[in-house]
Image (cartoon, rainbow, N blue to C red; front, side):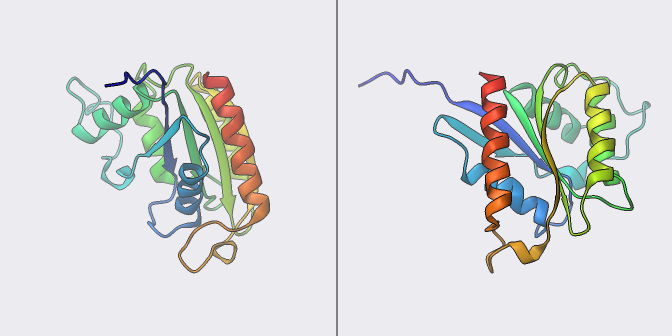
Length: 180
């Protein structure tokens, strides 16, 4: 029986939107669909289950879903985060997830591809989120802030917009290179 000698790089992808049919969830699925050979993309789909952050709860052992998020980040070579913009800022659920990571070692120096996309653009959230990631000592790869809506998805909810697909492929290639 042949021995497997190739190494698979694992990336963790997170959608900043809690809506399963969101455009950002579609972007995360596109990242997985178009990942290069030798790269496996897993998604963290438990954002809605994270409790509201409280330092009183950030003790050992951490809540199970928090421990799962930290472990998934710890075993990943890098992260892909796709986020919408709400009221010129990042979604509260995504900020809550980041708050759970502030005291954790797993995200430190972790490469992160950040793609921000909303129908009206996402420049404000993108700038805000970029600052938070840098403050948390993550290595940011800027995937850009995009004007992106459900109109750029096919009837099955998958990304078909050529410019967005090109941005995804480019960003993932830069992330893989940084992780290698």
